[in-house]
Image (cartoon, helix red, strand yellow):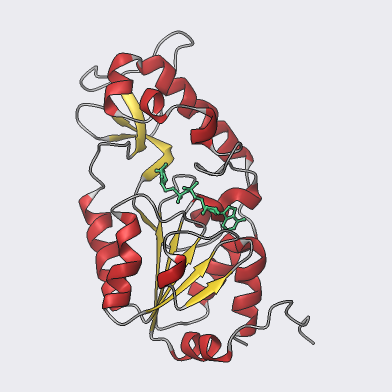
Length: 250
Ligand code: APR
């Protein structure tokens, strides 16, 4: 017998999820918080509360001090490698495998934990920290040797290598943005999980989905600018709410 859910989900929400032909999810750093990875904007603990994004996450910061930026991403990459997908990631992977006719997972996260949880092909809006690319040609480099005192260089053109993530002031990868846009326009339900909904263009996707007739479900322990516009707000941690929500579909 299934363990009784601690949540009494709205019956209409469950019905909407059960009849949905296309469920999409948009995730942010909050879904990885229970895996021990810091979010960006949570007070005190968030990365941007401890580090200055202008010194670490912009093209001009990399031009000014590539070693500082390279080392900071190397430090984050170690944390990501040591982390494990949590019940929130696993629940979304399970939802995808449940045979919902269509499912799309759009993530702002660069940690690759969705893939490690079994999600088939998440749409990575902001790149992936486990990849490195040539800062001139943009080609992804599989293997690189980081000398202790310098930033590694592209074997082909000699330019500096950089993390394959989207920095502030940079455009998102066009194919990912187009796929996310299409999913937002076509989904019946959009689960918005663990994002402060402040960073664009990702933060524009819920409004686009809503204008296209989708039901918006926010899953976040804290209020965000999206909360007032959401059809359902589930106040709790992703690793607790998502497994319960997926189980409630049984
Ligand atoms: N479960 C669900 N949500 C959580 C949890 C949790 N366990 N813990 C925290 N949150 C919520 C916070 O309340 C907050 O609203 O996750 C959100 C994290 O917000 P941000 O730190 O702003 O992260 P995100 O929205 O992903 O940032 C967007 O900004 O810095 C850039 O490129 C970076 O992709 C990132 C983008």
